[in-house]
Image (cartoon, rainbow, N blue to C red):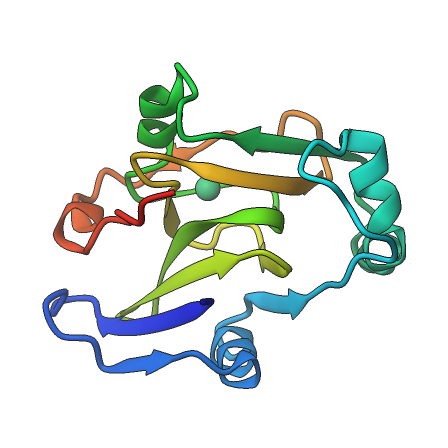
Length: 183
Ligand SMILES: [Fe+2]
């Protein structure tokens, strides 16, 4: 279930708040400039649907975001629990960082955990199937796909090479619960 757990950034042992209602999550993230939406497919998708089919199923929602932000490119990425590069992929963005571009993920399937560090708090956001999360440029965050990653996600970019991690050097991520959900 999609869940937002809010911590004081100095108190990773004790959450201040746990939200599971969509409207509550949307509003709490919206208050710190992070968009959160639920998208529905215009047609049923199978687990093996390819990139074009996936994008076509969410075309209306994608076009709406595109009209707002003018994205230049779009792709679909997926990870599965037995992927040979899963540890490398997981390790890539496990430390706190920012990007010069938006980080947008729409979860077509599966799940992943975003941790947003803002205003003395950490917003630990479990995204699941049907969730769209939009982190604007320079939002401080990290991402954990878990030890047995399982997701298929649409990504949107304003620049093809804008999605490089600028690491803050902070070890804050090490103090918060990792995403350990079994696929
Ligand atoms: Fe990131």
